[in-house]
Length: 175
Ligand SMILES: Cc1cc2nc3c(=O)[nH]c(=O)nc-3n(C[C@H](O)[C@H](O)[C@H](O)COP(=O)(O)O)c2cc1C
Image 1 (cartoon, rainbow, N blue to C red):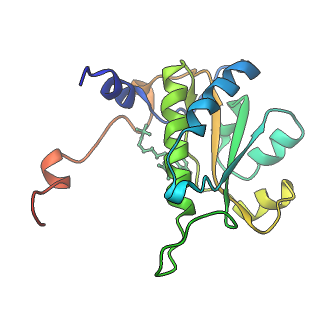
Image 2 (image 1 turned 180 degrees about the vertical axis):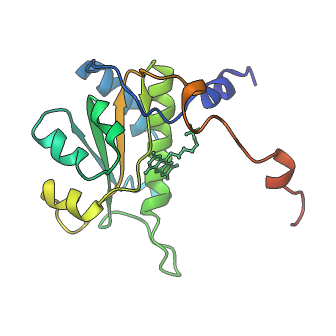
C-alpha cells in the first residue's frame, strides 16, 4: 500500500460551503467515468444520475433540502435508484441502496481527487424531488450530492474526522 488511497479517503469530507464557480462539463464527465466502473450486485448498475446545473430547476431541487448551506452549491447531482433493474436476493432483499452507495462513494472520492468537494444528503424530501423531476415510479431519489469547488476546508467543518477507534469496530473470529 503506498498510502495514496488512504490519504484520499482522509481528505474527503462533507463540504457545506462552495465557491461560486461552476465545474466544467468535461470535468463532470471525467468524474462520472469513475462512477461508471463501480461494482454492483449481479453487475445490474441500477442507477441514474441527474446533474442539475441550471435554474430554475436547480433552485427547485435545492428546495427539497431544508438547510441554507445548499444554496452555495453550483450544481446538485440527484442519485436515482432503478427498482426495475436492481438485483434481489432469494429472501427478497433489494440491493439498490447498497449499489447506489458504492457508486456515490466512487463519486465523492473521485471528486476529492480532482480538487472538487461533495456532501451526501439523505435528509431531503424525496417525494417532492421525484415530483419536481417528473420521475417514473421505478426511479427513486436516494441522495442529493452537491458538487463544486470548496470554500471551506475539512478542519473548519462541523464534522471534523471523529471516528470510532479501530478496536471498537473490528474483531477477529467472532464478536
Ligand atoms: C448516507 C449519508 C447521508 C448523509 N446525509 C446528510 C444530510 O442529509 N445532511 C448533511 O449535512 N450531511 C449528511 N451526511 C454527511 C455526514 O454527516 C458526514 O459524512 C459525517 O458526519 C462524517 O463527516 P465527513 O463526511 O466530513 O467525514 C450524510 C452522510 C451519509 C454517508
